[in-house]
Amino acid sequence: MSTFTRRSALIAGAGLLAAPGTLRAQDGYPNRSIRLIVPFTPAGTTDIAARILAERLTQRLGQQVIVENRPGAGGNVGSDVVVKSDPDGYTLLMCTVSSSAINYSLYGARMPYKPEDLAGAGLMLQVPNVIFVTNSLPVRTLRELVDFAKKNPGKLNNGSSGLGTSLHLTGELLKTTAAVEMQHVPFRGSGPMLQEVIAGRIEVAVDNMPSVIGHIRDGRLRALAVTSKARSRALPDVPTTAEAGFPAVEATAWFGVQVPVRTPRPIVDRLGREIDAVVKEPQTAARIAELGGEKPGLTPDGGTSPETFEAFIRAEIAKWGEVVRKSGATVDQ
Image (cartoon, rainbow, N blue to C red):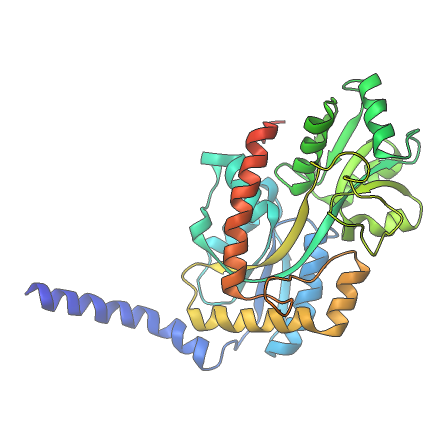
């Protein structure tokens, strides 16, 4: 067989392999239910965002979008499930700043997947983190917390929803910036962590605003600062970390959808259009705002697209890699 013939055969074979996925994307996708994998436990911000998105995508796509929680290893377990799934548009990842940006530098060679194993479909929302304390701790400002920690080095427990999360890294940023010692206590999700802080067994914690805002509004927890550049409209009386005297402690969590990288482009584009439409719906925007979140803001009209989300993820990987390097954070804490 000549070189030309062998090459033609390879191209033809590749076309046959790609054809089913491409045809499904163009004719009849989706024609069955879709799994939306959440790589964290129920009741956390990732789960809340996923259920809002799944409800609206179900309506728009005409097929049930089923949320499936697959927690573990800071989001790596569930993300790896998606990476290893068929690239046919029926298994989606509710990705986060942790699972798709921070973990690459934090876990290093222990990561089960690479950035190039996933493709972005769309960003759903961005939210600030909140630094808060148990009500029994005698501090009411971030500065008072820092002063208390300096007088009691290593005696405060600092909770997060897991190793490698933006919550873990925000706590590390605070400790590094303020030169204080606190014992990091990672949990398997926000739910159990919040209950321990409410009970007073964990004194200090960081969480995404949607997970903790209800407890703050009800007075079960005391918010000290939000980690965004501007105050949150959802908690207007809570100062930013910059206003509290710690401008370097800035961190925004984000949540979106990724798919296996070999997913046919027509499917990725369809998902991108639907996610963009969902986040622009007034009812979705209202629910996001109520939780303290912000719309994507990646496109000129405030929305999202596969291309802008891909570029956003690349920038976040670089940004958080530098944070991990400077803070010295590890998954062995």
